[in-house]
Length: 139
Ligand code: AMP
Ligand code: ZN
Image 1: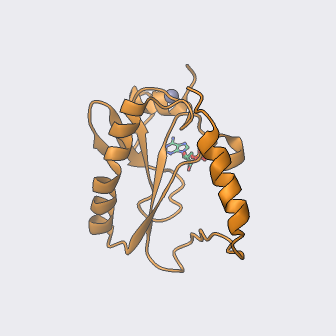
Image 2: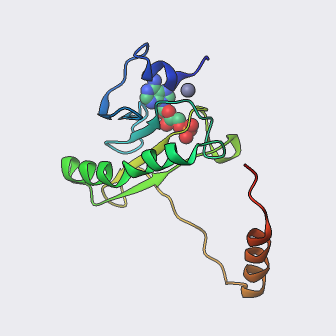
């Protein structure tokens, strides 16, 4: 398969690795949106969060807190953003599941992730929650 991250796993393309075990690999993102910007991936190929095997997800997400603490300590970060982009509409450009770890160093560290706040519409929220609860997960 012509997949960039599978090639990194196979050692065909170089990467600055920060963690590796049987199932998981973490390496520095070439774009370094903030210093220490790291990608955590399963070694097995899954397109994104929608087709990720639950056991693999457990192994993948299970590494996130430890890696976050390690980045915080190693780089003196104050905080971290943990992001997964799934599908093009969400900004996914490499179609091999990955989690972005973005260490944060202050308001001027080059990253601005803020959610728009608006007046809560509780009736709408209740309807939406019901719709989601009643939807059978497709697997
Ligand atoms: P996304 O847009 O969520 O799919 O993220 C893909 C990320 O992969 C981007 O942040 C890229 O900078 C990063 N990337 C692309 N090629 C490489 C590479 N060879 N090594 C490390 N990171 C890469
Ligand atoms: Zn792949």
